[in-house]
Image (cartoon, rainbow over the protein chains, first blue to last red):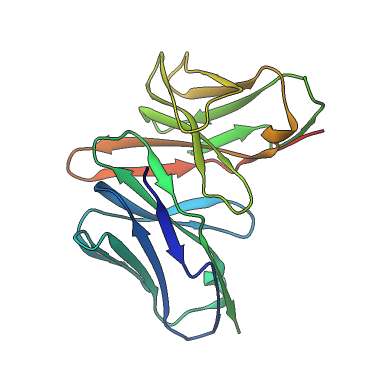
Amino acid sequence: KNEVEQSPQNLTAQEGEFITINCSYSVGISALHWLQQHPGGGIVSLFMLSSGKKKHGRLIATINIQEKHSSLHITASHPRDSAVYICAVRETGANNLFFGTGTRLTVIP
Amino acid sequence: NAGVTQTPKFRVLKTGQSMTLLCAQDMNHEYMYWYRQDPGMGLRLIHYSVGEGTTAKGEVPDGYNVSRLKKQNFLLGLESAAPSQTSVYFCASSYRRRTSGETQYFGPGTRLLVL
């Protein structure tokens, strides 16, 4: 059974801090996704990774396929980054995603 | 483009009542999904569709039925609602490209309370 674990579950940071959120999974995957769920509930996709590293603005996502681990980094965090960040994986050959329970990030001004 | 829309946004049902949740997308996506989100748990897939006229079971399909009669619409039905189906329901759609993979686009969610 595929398990997706995120850490930490909750994270509070001061504005400007560097943030790291971790995701570990247990089976072979074809892709890993990072998503952001806003306080109002809306969900948006941030990244899709199958190897290496991707960067978009202040967000950086990395994946280590051998170690079955991914990290999402936020540089120069801002209160508007406050949200739940969700990791999801697509098992090799599967049609669907398995989701982690999310990391709730609060950035204090 | 409206993206992915869901109707209704909120609903209260009594145990045993039935209802249909509507998901619509205007991006010509082949794939559509229904998820439920419960406190302390990750999103869980209920049913999905890989094209018009096709549906398949996900992780938690019991108590739900779906239909994809038109490419742009994906309906989720509850035949006899139970309190355990109290949840927030999200619809998503996507395309898949061999080179660029898949990005799922989510609707705003439907909050359902079953009394």
